Amino acid sequence: MPWIYLLLSAGLFMGWSLGTNDAANAFGTAVATRVVKYRTAIIIIAVMILLGAVLFGHESIAKLTSIATNNGVLATEETVEAAKAAGELEALRLKSALKAFIIFACAGLTVFIMSYLKFPVSANQSVIGAIIGWGICYADYSDAEILQTNLGEIAEFASTWLINPLVAAVISFVLVFLIKKFIERHLTSMRSYDIIVKVGYIAAGAFSAFSIGQNSSASVTAFYYDAGGANLLSNARLTAIIGGVAIVIGVLTFSKRVMMTVGSSIAEISQVDGFVVILASALTVLLMNKWWGLPVSTSQSVVGAVIGAGLVSGVKKVNFGVLRNIAIAWVSSPTVAGLLAFLVAIATKGYFGA
Image (cartoon, rainbow, N blue to C red; front, side, top):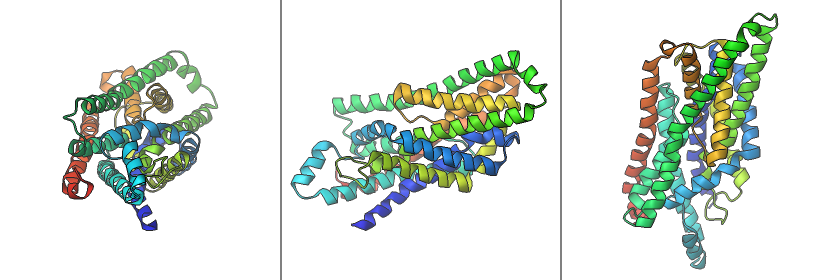
């Protein structure tokens, strides 16, 4: 059934939506402060996201497939073996691909709407929200073991939504404080200041884009993956690369709106501060990914880093009106995605079964 590969389109749409949103995290401050041109920024982002996806993107698949399996999105090993024995593996592949399509369609639509409204939301949050919405319908939460497992995994993901921006804010605050105290005055007096700042922005932005490829590429295709052949993709690295390509297309086509929101609206920051924001955000994403083994929100890390940089100059430098709207969007994105997935799950229960 070659046509079932059309179901990958929802994952590709999810990746495109993520690319339109998360490009801001690599070069938002650079473009907003006019140190780097938008066209230059998106080319660098595209190349480095692909590199991150190719080298390390597949490492985040395991955690995502675990929570998806426990919430009825992916088939368990026992279900796969039973389908093989009964000669029904193709039917199971179709159902698995359809469920992945639904999850990514609900999450991708949510991210697209938020991006259109210029809110830097978390694609990963939307995906997890959609999984939970599906699981409320299909997972047996009355079973104590299933309840404990699912709540533990949900809590693990949710904890990163708070810790991630806080860590980024702390790293950014410390770095900006130290640079302002010991380096910035000497740096701005140098004849080559503009060149140094531009090179710094490009290097930090490239590092940040690489972290997006490593962190997020699998998030947009992971639920089409099954090493046992019970889904559309059985190669983990290829799964991540396809996700990376989808993200890059989003970067190249529709990323400017959110990029300007992140770069200039949250807090008043200098050119040097903006470079530190990108660096702090990328460091946070990589640290969180290594500590938890989870794909964390790059949008949350960059917003946290911008706030940390702004606070060095005082609370008045932070635009709490914009920050409030972003916080509302962070809560809304998993909620909306979860509600959409739950409604679809209810409507399709006759096909997917109890």
